[in-house]
Image (cartoon, rainbow, N blue to C red; front, side, top):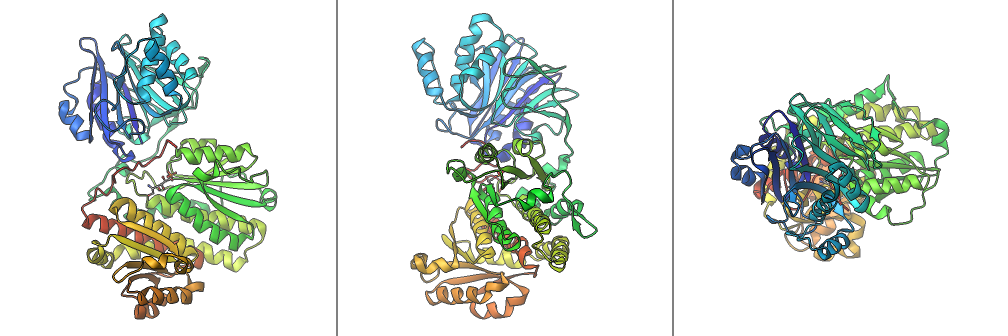
Length: 612
Ligand code: AGP
């Protein structure tokens, strides 16, 4: 979704803003713009529809705009089509104030109508411009920007991260936040605001996370933060330990490819600190054995791929814990009047930690008395800070829109959490416990085996990339993985694809199978392998071309019925999804490559979905 950067310091702002925006490109956008202030030129604003390269060429890499104070924005359209006028920054009617916004102003129409009645004019269709005009309206009254911003945030409803500069303030950038991410960065050459730490990592690792309702005044030498009543707030500083190179391609053709290659290491970093002497240790998590024994129901809430992780968990955990486990889409959970109470453990999964629906669902669960444990990749993100407990996946920055390494680390970490809960409940035998722990420790080496032999997967992509509709079928854990395989394929190759529980085929979907239809059958879940074989025979009988994903154990049997087979190493049954998903991620990647798609930045998608 939209990316915001702001800088005030001792160097030219425009090149710094462009660089920061480029590092946030992965968030997804359709237009971009910057505003820079200088004593001689006043506010200079350049914005355009399209890629950042277009903006950068327009201002010659930033050299055309002089000034050491500025804001920049990449826009992901919500209100108003992607065009130059709707791009940010938005400038107030008299040209004094420029503003960038991420989020949605829900009452913008009502404010716009009242400003129109007062004679103000608008040049865009956006909700964001309304904030710029309202700000000017208040600012005209006493020429105090902090006061005007405070009045604006009391008036607007919805979500926002705002970056503001004013022609009358040569050395100040103003920021405000509610329900949209915004960080403050303290650097040697000046200070920053950004939606995302990757935008400013090159300049500083010293950051603070703005909280809802806060307003910050940032100058080249200091940062003052206030609450919504304008009382000063002391912010804690955090040091970001991500490596700058981790957010760069480092010679790989795409971030997605790099990130898949990093999966074994990401899993190692995520699980090793949590296994000591063969036991799962979850430091800093306050779930006592007494509390765990009192849990009556577990909800696992997430969106997209993170939701697919929760589906795997549901199958594994119910079997292991003998407690009802519900995997719920965050966007559905929040409006479903869920049966959460103080005996409910609510697991929240999010790579970004900023997904709005997931954040809102978590708040709803807390409000109803549930205890929340977040599984998050981005340190200091909103979900990480608001949950009762947080466990981080140590996948490092994930830049490609299609998640791969974060998904895999979520799976592995939740295997450990499940085991931890089962141990406290006494529902896992010591032998089983030991086998799962050893299995988790072996995952990185087994994943490496797959990554070292991608030729077959590449070949299958070259054979199938012209298909326009592809089915994924499987049962139980294989179904959950099929959902993820199908999503991966859809989001980056734009091929229509559906994932079905194999048993459901006969209830409707099988009518879509005709000669030549590609069906990817997942048959790695040992207890239901024979059933999987039956489904392959059924679709073959209707002319389908079958590409099977199975384990070494079933290679020969499956080889006799499927047209082609991809084989993965055998893991402990509950861990098998961690291996099965990898060839599907690679398959989606190579299919997209064959079709010439923009793999890291697929159309219409955003990495971090910060609006509803
Ligand atoms: C996955 O490839 C997607 N880009 C998307 O489904 C993602 O998993 C979803 O938006 C949830 O994001 P989160 O994990 O950051 O909350």
